Length: 124
Image (cartoon, rainbow, N blue to C red; front, side, top):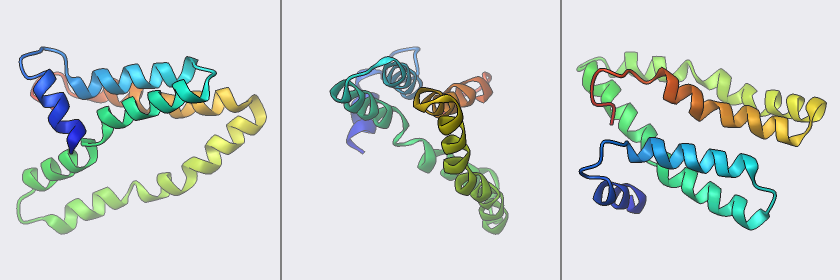
């Protein structure tokens, strides 16, 4: 919550979405650093940018389907197999191609989300 309030105060009049900016900068920083301390800072920055995504998106899903909370829960549940399989897939990639490739695979997720977000309306 502190991250959301801080980002809102800093970027209130900005045209740049703070959550997208912080997440992207954090992921890039995390992928290029070799220092444990800088990786920790990058993970903190990623968390600042991504902390509020899930509750906000979930609330928007319920808002767009009033009276159909079961349908929303079912659609959200469709992601469960991916959540279960993702650590194994990342482990296989890291075992075959190295830890950097595994982290790079994880780093693709925010980039793909940024590419898939609709451009038309307000997304946050």
